Image (cartoon, rainbow, N blue to C red; front, side, top):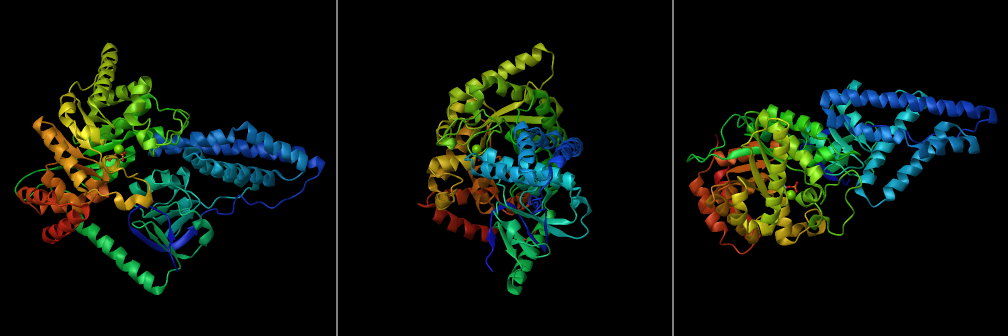
Length: 579
Ligand code: PEP
Ligand code: MG
């Protein structure tokens, strides 16, 4: 049987029994009522709404306490659904007109809402479907008095199959017994994907109809590397994946011993090996994988999945948590990068033809200084709690950098006038992810203390390859000679002006490229926590001198493919050395 393909959300292989969550709850049989029964139906509906509202508030508070306010606040969107007058009035109207039970009317109205949201060409609104269905299920459960199977009471190890896992599902489930996730909807930035990665549970999202293709108790394989799910696999498939799972686990076990070791070459060059995070809770994984710090904290996640902007205080609390947990290790916080493929949850940003070339990141921030300065003040206030560094995304030229620094200066003055402490010496850097910046690093350098190379964007702009378009993925080549030349120019110009230079794009996490990045002279490498031990293993197995020779040779090739072939041979020579 062929696998169902989706989006790889969290690495690893899970093999186990399916547990399908509430797939049919929104289907309620039609039942007629008499005229005299109408008031009672309306009263039942209103009671269920009140009960559900109290439930949501309870969950929001519990999750805020246990996981942080930014997780709890996701439930504000649920409250908006339950308070939607249009929805409530439509249900009441139809009970009166059609003389059917409110359970049936509500399930019909919810289905209609969900269908029309799914048709809208707007990612944010489409994602609201999960809020509507989560709340809808809750109201119906309260109407019919059914108890939801409690995920906290799962008795055996299962793979959860769901249309989507709501934040309450992931927060309340018994984590020991959930060994994998697979969901119909969701993307790389969806809550489920982020949670799965930080919980280190293999997961595949965006499978479209997995809830219809899988039944309770089916045997499943969730391949979180390739983004595939196998349903009732053949004996040979099962055998193959068991071996793959054992291999994955063995590699991870073997890598554990690197956790406490320094990231240093055999001839003494030390590299800062840092981690990328999206949410404050991920610091747990950063620490457990032995990172030297955080090299990219993508703060825009605080602005997503919600209807309002986070306040200065809320941002301060979130950043403080990260910085304190990591202290004395450094944290590079990136000012928010909304736009491109990361949407803002409310109406600020119009739909654009070329969002990656559009009104995003620092461009948005400079146009909306009042929003930007709120973040800058929160960052400055955080700087007294540990070792905080800050960087701006999507700098295309020195003008933007000067403007951003001017706003930073004003924010500092505002804090000074209120006698609020901050670190006067906080390092400020620029992300180098646009070719125009890469080619003018010498001009940018006097304005900052460091550069961090964002290869995800740099490659897409240098090679004119949309980073999320799978049709042209074959052209997205990190080892392309043009990319290598840009990297060399950035690192050399930074060093010539005494700046340290790091890399935080996905390229930094590819072990095949590690010898190259080392030889180019990077001072810091930042990637997903789970990838750090393998990179450290390679760096510890080779000398800086050797890596410089690799770069010299790599720069002579005409194509990315030749560079990759050459690096494969080199990695085979380096890698097998036991520690
Ligand atoms: C990058 O562009 O490489 C980067 C790290 O930023 P993001 O992926 O958030 O655009
Ligand atoms: Mg980027």
